[in-house]
Image (cartoon, rainbow, N blue to C red; front, side):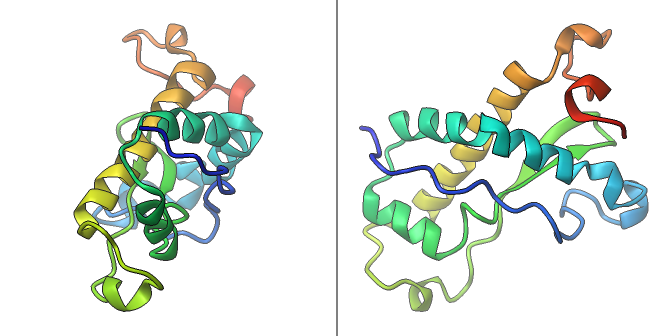
Length: 155
C-alpha cells in the first residue's frame, strides 16, 4: 500500500543536542564533528525527498497514522548526523511523547508503536539512500561509506 502525501520539508538539524548514542559530549569532540549542517544540505539537495518518496511507496502507514506521526513531531524530529566514532552516517528517532494521546487532534487507529516503527523505516530508507548515492564506499579500504571533502565540504 502506498502513502499518497507530499513529502514534508527535511528535518531541521540545527540546534540539536548530542545524540543519545553518545554518553558524553567528549565522545564526539563537539557538535562540529557531527556534520549536521552538511548532512542537512544533502537532505535538502534531494536525498530527503527521494528517500521519503521511496518509503511512502512501500510503507503500511495510513494517512491518519502519518498525520499522527507529524503531530507528534516524529518525522521532523528525525536526527541525522555523521557518527565520528563509527565513521558512518547515522540517525536517531525521537521518543514518542508520554502524553501522545493528548497531543493528537484525531484518533490514532493503532498504537504509537506502529507509527514509531514506520518512522524508523523512513529514517533507514533515507540513510540507505544517502549512503548509496551520496557517499563513496570506494574511497575507503573496508568498503564502508566515507565522508569526503568533495561531497560534503571541509570538515
